[in-house]
Image (cartoon, rainbow, N blue to C red; front, side, top):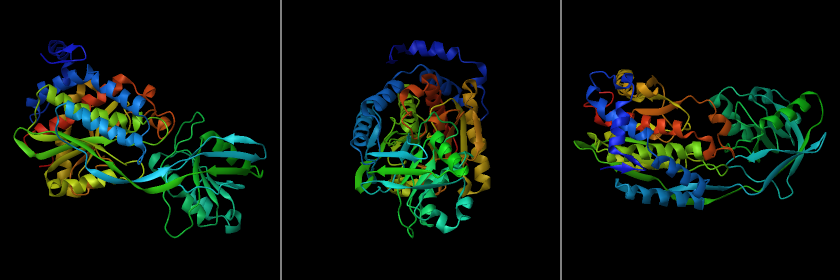
Length: 466
């Protein structure tokens, strides 16, 4: 009798019998999948192993920045556990990754009053001189406002980008490109209002990049409250002076690895449905939502298929990618590792938006042409109908993920898990991205959603989009 953490096979059958009828609704394509989907959902919602693994990853291994010993520990632990799970072809292909270290850092308001500023250096930033940089601040809300300033207003100063939240995509440009845009006009450092719609004096880090043709200047994020204060003072015509100290450094690339394991398909093992998240995290918090939960949910989804003996037609492969946060080397390396077999990838699923309550998926297959996109969405919607009872059945056009991007550019349909996204950007890239901000019930719903969709796409008779 199969048993996991106190839940017997009989318990699961009883649980499945209690699932609301709408869950079992399906179209002709997925009618044969109803029972298996219900069993996966029942197993996921009563499973404790996944949560225990997420707890171990966050609390005992901790933050996992590329190049760190903690990331090496996470890779070794995950591979060993996958072998204990009995998954096939467990591999850790080597990937060389950037190795940036934060070091000691601080920021202080010196005038018109003295006060500490809540800050985090941006990943990839250079250091300040040993004594720090002390300079007046010029505050702007946009690149257009910066470019409209005379160069003498910027030269020798620290530029503060106090850009209001307009969604992650539009706003993150100030974190990514702000330092180089400021350096073009002679600024000596750049500060960026944290990329978040809500703050409790919590700065958010993240990756930045330097343009090749301008000097590299130090860059850091300020808590929303501190950025707002400096901007208000500057707008009132009050001279604002800040001291920024950063010991950041970039070391030679370090060895890391993707973690790969699979459940071979029973009829078409050469065809592959891949799902996963990224195992690295920033060096603050413990990477619970970003992206420990995604890694463990996808991994556990495959384990549940094996334990329930729900072996699909096609192979289902779990991948824990390395170096998503500051390089995307893991996703690129996986594409290279896959080689010619990329043409056999039926679908790629990614969970990298936190473990809040799932709504369903966004799907993109546009590189393969609009007709393929429409067929793929229609097929995935039928599989998604099996998730109606837990509310994560929606499949809409437009989705994917950073680590599956290289596969999608080869024509592989990509699906990104969508959640309610109510609080994710409050924790994103902060000290607060910890296990206590993950709801166990929502996490189990994510496991169920990833399991049913990946199993369903691996089980339906035709390839996705065909």
